[in-house]
Image 1 (cartoon, helix red, strand yellow):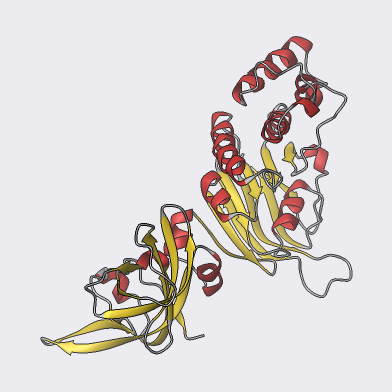
Image 2 (image 1 turned 135 degrees about the vertical axis):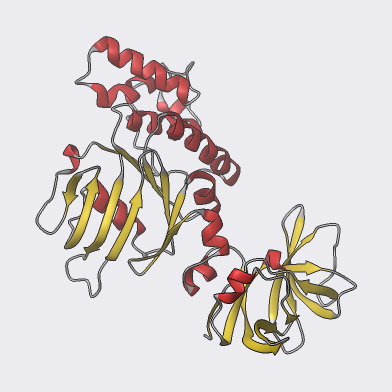
Length: 357
């Protein structure tokens, strides 16, 4: 079922600003969306508004062709056919795994309920554990039971609020991929709230970046990383820094050509269409860690200020002449010490600039 939000505004009683401030997005049928952003940015409020737990002051929320929330309309949560999965799982401790999953099927014929429970147990990889009690399961298994229980009534939309936050890092990453596969197998539209960007990248088709109740960008992970719409998105997603740059026109061979000049030198091999769209003047250039290449033969020398071991690579923080800092991913067999200097060059495939901050 398609989910649409159009200019949605909510505000808590006594608050000085809106909790959601003109949020617009579309999540198509069968797609998985994720919301990320700093604490208090409004992502959980948005989830609650979609569920019907928060009222809308302005704008509309629609499921399919039905408006479920507006200034004049409020469909009760239980009538929205929306499932929810919470971070604490909320399983019934006195019911078996199978009976937990069957809880939302009390109006379904016994044979149909039994068949649906068996189907979901297999889907979430717990086919042999239906008679176990929740306390006998691991955290990851409990989360899959909670997911199966939410999917059992075949909701129009599934909402997940920080569903993996109680799990260790390795389990989170593995379960995130499993949950994506399960939701796709069920052809379920879903919206996830998370504080973990990698989790959002692993699960979602579209990701929304929020700040102060506003949705800065709604796009796939690749676009958020390489084509951030705002300076906040550029700063929030991934590792990167801003470096002063000048975009200028040079007259050559009877034609005007744009050039991008930075403290690392002039950038080359920029896509002509992208280059054409860059505003002229003094700008701030977004440089990702993967835009900087370690090259001992390069003329630019950079001093290692900090280093963080990431297994297969180091994340170096480097300082060049003039005091500007850049980040670089360097294979971990290049184990240089803090204070050493290494050669670097810029290879910026996706040139993104913002007004000088």
